Structures are given as structure tokens and as C-alpha cells.
Length: 159
Image (cartoon, rainbow, N blue to C red; front, side, top):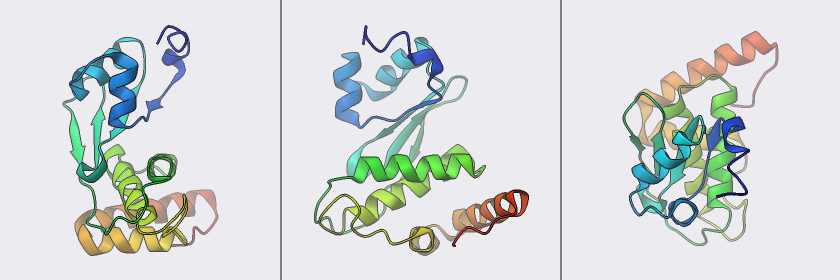
């Protein structure tokens, strides 16, 4: 923690898994552990908790749990990295943080279905199809946000 402390105020989202967060902070309770990072200046913490999805902790708001997707787990290699990539994609596209984390959870679920760090993910369309199946109300909101983002950017995302 001492080595990271000077950098933490520059971090918008700290995105560890539950074991990493507990190990880094020495706190067993994930909300308390995330709070320890917020107290050091981190903008928000998105901690993955395996089959339980993710937990979002930000200043000034209560913790939010984002659900995992049902999946047949073959290999969890790369699931955390794919969660991070999905969440970052959603945040950069202008999605609400909770929706961005749901994109991340969908990415993690897809990666878990095969061997290797990118198994199960072919493209954004596949990620969005998984969200469409399990959370159609949220999927509509995500699709609208992505459409608005691509219109502003003047490019077409594959979705």
C-alpha cells in the first residue's frame, strides 16, 4: 500500500478482485476495504467477487452490487481482465457506472465459458446479446447510450 499511496489520488477506478482488495488493505469487509482506498483518494472501487458479480463503492453513495451472469465455468483465466475491459468500455461510452459494470460482468461470464483469457468473447454484439437475454431493461438503456456515443463520435460500434 505504501508504494501505491502516491498514485491512488490519480486513479478514477481501482478494479481488483476480492482477494486482491483484502490483501492490499488488510480489511476483511469489502466495503471497508474499498473505503480505505477511497480515503486515500481513489475515485471509485469496482471489486469483482466471482459468481456474485461485482461491488461498486464510490464516495457519497452506498455500495452497489452488480449481478453475475449464469454460466458454465470452464476456466476463470482472464475473467477479471475482461471485466475491467468491459467496464472501461462502458464508462468511456458514457454508460452509467452500474451499466458499465454489468457489461464487465457479461465479459467475465463469457470468458469463463472456455479455455484461455479471451475464450467466449467474439465481439461487442455477443456481450450485448448476453445482457439482452438476462437484463433486457438494462440492455435497452445500454444500447441507447452506445448509439448516442457512436452518433457523437461519428463512428459505428459493432453492436
